Length: 115
Length: 110
Image (tube, rainbow over all chains, first blue to last red; front, top):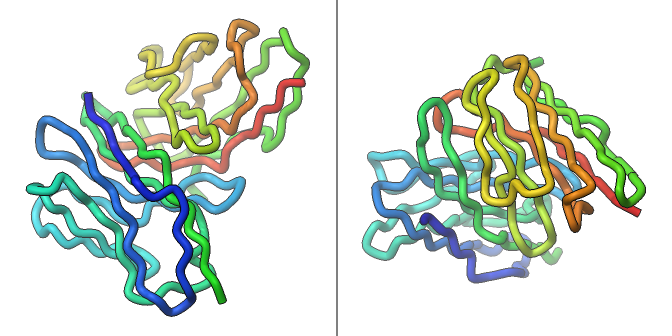
């Protein structure tokens, strides 16, 4: 069965500092990988996704992630964090089944940004 | 505007009552999903449907039921058999690989 581990429950960074959120996955085949962001009381917004090809993926809001097969990782990065980036971030691995896909989510990382 | 709507945003029910959460999408997506979110546990899949009149159990289907009579709609019923129904419920839809999420319904059982 597929699984996702986000080892950091909470992370605090200063505004303008760089950010890296860790994600490790377990999946038998080539994974489909996603990062979502959630503001309090809201739904999830897709930041970026990896299906195949270039292992460095660019997303919205200045985020990027790198797929490393040898480490089973898909870490999310941002060179300079803005106060508006404070939110909860979820990594997910997808299993394609017929007309849709099933996602398995990590437990999330809560990001706090200090001004 | 295309998107996913969930209603109501907040829902309060007495223990032992069934309650139905609404999810509608106008994205013309074939697949729809229901997730439950609890603090510190991420999202867990309750049910999903890939086509009309067909649906499958997810990882935590006990105490829940769904129907898919129309492509646009995928309502979730939280039954009295669900032991701990207070949670944030998220609906999603997808065409192929990418899931789009609704704004969620927060259910509180008193």
